[in-house]
Length: 300
Ligand code: NDP
Image 1 (cartoon, rainbow, N blue to C red):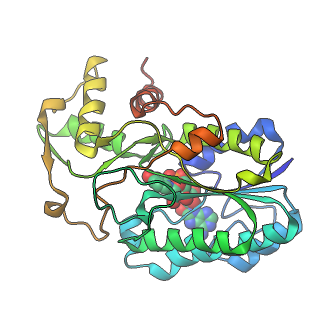
Image 2 (cartoon, helix red, strand yellow; image 1 turned 120 degrees about the horizontal axis):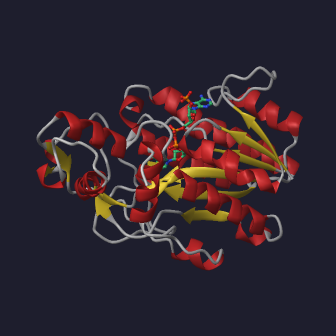
């Protein structure tokens, strides 16, 4: 199997390099690459030409415009990268009869209510990022290509910056932290997502009937505030020097912490379809976060 991986240096893309390797030849195409093929999602037509030239069996798109706040003032670029480019790739994949794997987000929803949403729930994005990601999903579905769209949330990885690392840095500098306590979701490891993707692809290549959109998040739920407390408790237990421990994390309402882009309060995603159709067990979010922390801090 020939797999074209876009965005190979992001959180999820980096883990996909590992997880996809046993499935076949992985061509990892970053935005800038010396090989002459275009891996830049800001150039949808050139990207489609790359797909046509390489004729992969599977395109896995882990690239996206993920700067949620910046996107509010840069909607055209966000739309090109998150919607037009996935659409162009999907049409090229449809023409060649391959598969497209793409990642989407809880931000396609408005975040109302307190129940998990399944894949059939009405969408209603409240930010530029959310609207462009939803448009990308819709263009993929409209292309008629065989696809796996994985909607995920609150991605973390040992590599690169993330929320847990930020909390640890701030807790080393300050006596007290304030973190929003009314956004609820599931922190999900890039490693878990990559492993799920490889598992789904193994099934997909022998059963085209699994083509579709799936919620893919770790099990359980937590607020950002309790997530921060969990991270600091984990670190303190292992002797990491912190000025602020878990008791020094104070909750704040989202409406009292204004950001350029609105965030959904309810990011709960129902994963029943994914688990049943692919015989998957999704671990609790804490196991992925603890493992990521151990790797990021080089602690057991
Ligand atoms: P990252 O921001 O870690 O990685 C995104 C990658 O896309 C980066 O390597 C970035 O490169 C690359 N990229 C951005 N613009 C372009 C471009 N024009 N051409 C080529 N590459 C580009 O994101 P994640 O790995 O966390 O996200 C993976 C997927 O999961 C995305 O589809 C995202 O929307 C989705 N998702 C992520 C969540 C999260 O919490 N992070 C939550 C829900 C969904 P560079 O660094 O050079 O800009």
